[in-house]
Figure 1 (cartoon, one colour):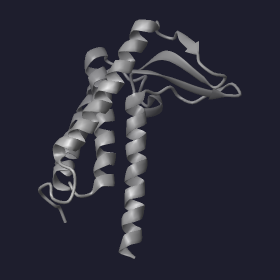
Figure 2 (cartoon, rainbow, N blue to C red):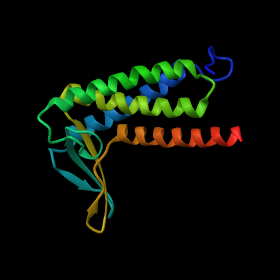
Figure 3 (tube, rainbow, N blue to C red):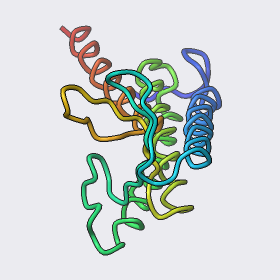
Figure 4 (cartoon, rainbow, N blue to C red):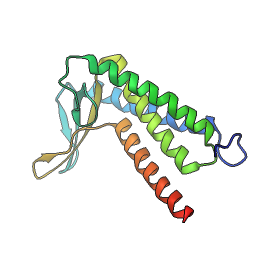
Amino acid sequence: MARRGNTEGLGLIHWLAIALVLVLADQFTKILVIGSFELGEGQAVTGFFNLVRVHNAGAAFSFLAGASGWQRWFFTALGLVAAVVIVWMLRNHPGQRLFCFALACVLGGAVGNVIDRVLYGYVVDFVDFHWAGMHFPAFNVADSAITVGAACLILDELLRVRRAR
């Protein structure tokens, strides 16, 4: 059942503040990368980690990156719809801290990547992990926030099912 008010949890403003911090961290790191590297240029940090400037016109793992350009607006619209739904869910479930934290992470990541799509037409990725010549697809702070949020949503559901038993 949806709970309203701030008596059993943190308020909507708190969760939106977390999302905003993630958006700012995401955009700040992308500005640093854009200012420091040309497209495709990188810098080795360790034997398994590089910073590299990559542009992704698609979604996760470059899904639809080779499409004719319509995907920019499709993924922008999808991110905006997701943001509206997430804010609605945050407003209606203030007492569910792990759930709200997860949603705030997903919201921050989605908005960070939407900003890229609107400004540039692609998402700026720069984190490159590799091992034995194999590279994990490059990603960014927004992608990391979405991943943490998704993991927390799964954990929240597992804990909810466990409590229900």
